[in-house]
Amino acid sequence: MNLPLRLDDIDERLLILLRDNAREPIAHLAKELGLSRNHIYSRLAKLEEDGVVAGYTVRLGNVYSASRVRAHMMIKTLPRFRREVEKALEKIQHIQAIYAISGEYDIIVMLEAEDGSQLNELIDDIGLLEGVERTTTSLLLATKLER
Image 1: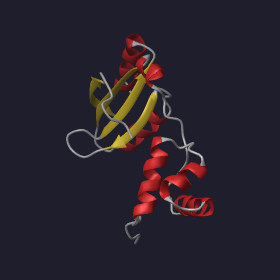
Image 2: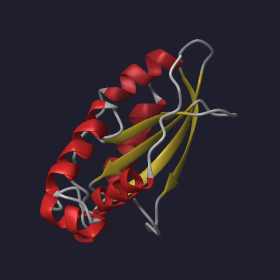
Image 3: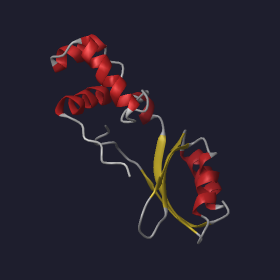
Image 4: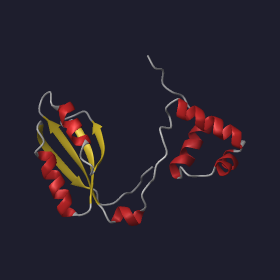
């Protein structure tokens, strides 16, 4: 059994800085946290080893994001079809994330398309997947907070 991972205050603050800018220079992180660069390297290595940090990525800017149509779709699957539907969804490149959820629906997917027409096709394609009982889609109008 895995015990819950406990992070100290410094690791929490380090993660906040990395979420804000994963490309922040080690020297700047060290200065912000009042630690040596070697200490920051050691903490990052430990966070990676423990699976807290799985990678470093790009966060898209407002200019690009504003040019895209984004939505989330809740999907109810037929009994015993959830895994098959998830595997089919993984193959669709315009799906940015797939979440298993509890409640009336089984899955939420985050969709991103170039325009309304492409999003409409995507919604239709997902609705036709074997094992999908019904879907409900909501357009994302504005991002108020993203970390």
